[in-house]
Amino acid sequence: MPKGGVGRKRNMGDLSAFLNWGVLEKKYLGIEWLPLTSKQYAKYI
Image 1 (tube, rainbow, N blue to C red):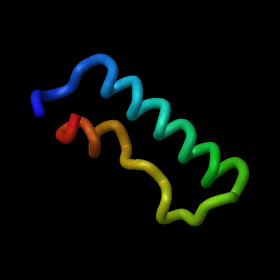
Image 2 (image 1 turned 135 degrees about the vertical axis):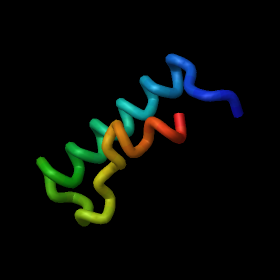
Image 3 (image 1 turned 90 degrees about the vertical axis):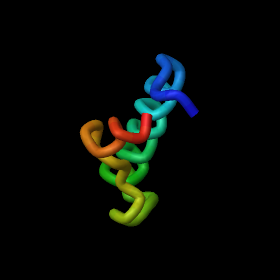
């Protein structure tokens, strides 16, 4: 798959925000569910 389009970057941002909300704010999920940082996932997108 070619490197990152705008849609993929936006989707990752939405997913990261949702996971941060579920883990850090609401405590619904364990710490292992924290998303990758932007630097970490930049090589995958």
